[in-house]
Length: 118
Ligand SMILES: [Zn+2]
Image (cartoon, rainbow, N blue to C red):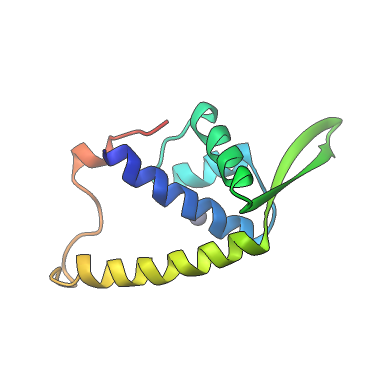
């Protein structure tokens, strides 16, 4: 179940970055690791394909160093979905973090932190 929550966060995270510039798998894996999500290609690539199938991302092949690299750019539908998700996130953060004082540490408990989803 926790994995389901995190996969939702990851999808929004991917859309957020794709809205800034086209993204590709390995760079996203590094970026997500920086945020505490351990994802392997076996999790990330199907997720990217799912966002593409939903019409939120558009794939664009580019040749980098003699190899084809698959970049994903956000589509107009993806931007709309991201805008809607932002509203829901703000609402959720407002409610879920409401009772937490400013002194509450932001780091999750160790058992949650260790929950890799890759
Ligand atoms: Zn990020």
